[in-house]
Length: 304
Image (cartoon, rainbow, N blue to C red; front, side, top):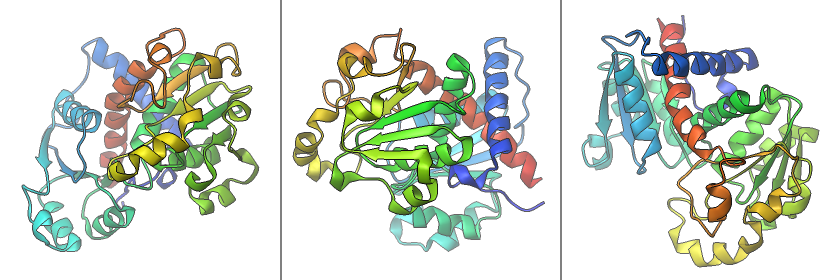
């Protein structure tokens, strides 16, 4: 069977995506019941980090360990990638020595190039354009709390960044309404917006986006690599903070999510982030672990 990669959500079919979410929920229960089986015994995950991380590293490394596998942490200072070795050469070498690779990097073209020459599955653990692993966890979290996301309304508030692009992909695949509120100069990928058609509403008004939403979600206003823009971004995004006042316009049982780390007082109020009657960010963070275990199980099975 041909190698399967996970570079965006749309590398999966809708049925495969739903199956992975259900597997993640099952694996989460097995972990809590201490009934997990070592299905990754003898398997090795290479984790290539060009961007720093907390949740990504801990969740992938812990996930491999919980299911009997091993992982290798590789940073630019540890490998020849950081010394100018061509991506295709590193891909050929590393993929002959491990069973699966995850990469957290800047340019999406870097991970596409690596996958092209890799002999094993490659997972996008974040690029500047997409963050599909986070979407797996977010969808799992919504399903656990509210059931299927199909037919619901999601509001994205803030920067039209990699998370926003991934939410657009999810809306295309899972048939829910996505309302995006962002400043005019910070919109998501225009090609994705065109593909999404009527399933996505783009506005500059946070209240319009949140009205009637079943889920409201956001991210930091200044991502890694954008630090020089921070003062300008904080000014441009000042009216895009998600707080209890904004959530009043959502459905009565609406959830709040944030992929973390959060800057309290900027994109989200501290009060909302800590309000567990609305905020499910800690469940969302934990679900990175279980969603990624399910994803790796899928990719390893598909490539055997």
